[in-house]
Image (cartoon, rainbow over all chains, first blue to last red; front, top):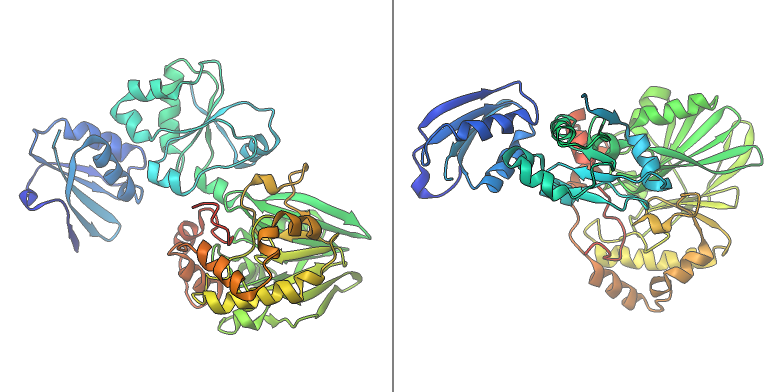
Length: 89
Length: 384
């Protein structure tokens, strides 16, 4: 398993309060689901989204950039990537 | 209402022929859009609003579009899904003529469009423009044989084209070891047995079999036909070779372009290769007839096309248009011109060279990604 730390030291807590299984979904559905999912947790909490669509690797950071939420960690295992997203706004 | 689609071939006709007024809405992320977008002489209205913004703020994104409801909107995305998503939003918001690009931007990136350059003395010469790469490959047919110059990796296209014209491909000429796109020669060879022709200055490390071409060597078809004469024109690469067809047309690879000239700095030896190119200009290009028709490997933009949208010009006209290059009278000044215009090449070029030499094997999906995007092969820094 490959882990990449992202964000700042304040964001070390990656305990997700909600997990979205987005495996098998293709563009635009992963972003649609994450956009909805992030609104169902509180600011400061973390959402974990598990994807298999290669497009997510560029689209999730672009989405985070657009919305102002923060990807604090990504984990890649085979064709699956987990994004740990902290709700900021 | 279901969103209708359109094909890359249709898009090519619209953006090159005109008469089809529409707005191209690209819904990929800003970064991908910035790196590679649809281009054409009649593409006057293009807007990039990422699909992510339609998801996050539908109303504001629809407002940003600023296209009257009765006008046509043609959507592009990476594949098809996001375009469909946005297309449905637009239909729900009152637009009626909204269509999405079949198979996404990749189908534009791989599109090859044939143009007849000449049909005379029993032969037919075609230019295959790849608008997504701004590159040109060529096909020459005589009787039941076809030779190809600088094929892209869409090898099936060339084989189908040959078949439709009652011919089989017997040779593929590589004007040089390409750095900016993956060559289709190996695939064509394995499908048809066609011989690959290249210069050992570029292909000495290649791990596949090729016919090593010599300066001034002449090639012909089995039944005669137009002569194809190799002219070694080093500079862009040490093995760069141009091919003179029927003493009238020069397939110039990345040496002579209609605007600018092929960069001699891509191999990491700018000084040495610039001197090679300077010598080629002085000793070979200088001697070429002014009425020789140049068929280049790339174009910078569509202003280089003739009224029939073929990328071609005479040697005389090219020397006039590029007097700032061909008029340089000293080798030192030429090297300085090259160095002043140098800019970073895309990181992927090193890997593409290895794939084209057969040294690196990558799967089809990876090749697809490596191969997408416009070329960076001209010396002048128009893009800077």
